[in-house]
Length: 162
Image (cartoon, rainbow, N blue to C red; front, side, top):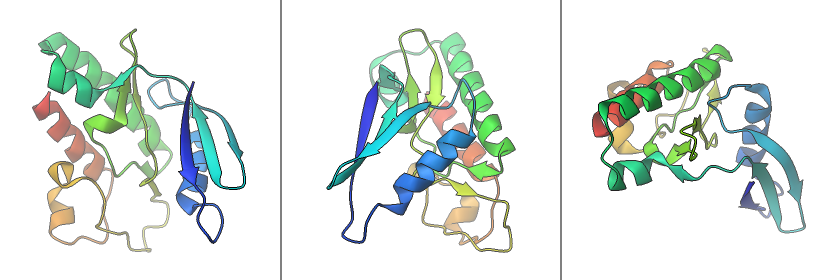
């Protein structure tokens, strides 16, 4: 297991913590990180996840990825994104650090702190998402309304980096 600690705010539990739990309980995919438990104490909230050995950033920086490895990783990320998008959710922070990999070669998307439901398109969305290197053009040009294309653009940047 891996445990993520979220420091409590003076106003109570951080909304991001609750949102991430709700989203992860909604998505059932072999390519999205699984949440096992949650608990809290007087100063912190905790999320217990399945354990993954490393992230894609480590592999990109330290391993020469073969074309076949890149295809396998990309395929699994696409399966995870498909599950996320089928639930009318956007991840909005796709980057190698949020793609976890175990020693069996299983790939899982993690960190849903920036995720957003898109079932209410009339509500504008923030442009202040995604690390700049992986940010899509519409976000740079100030779009308040966008779709799953922001996650797909980020994935394209990740593939290029691999």
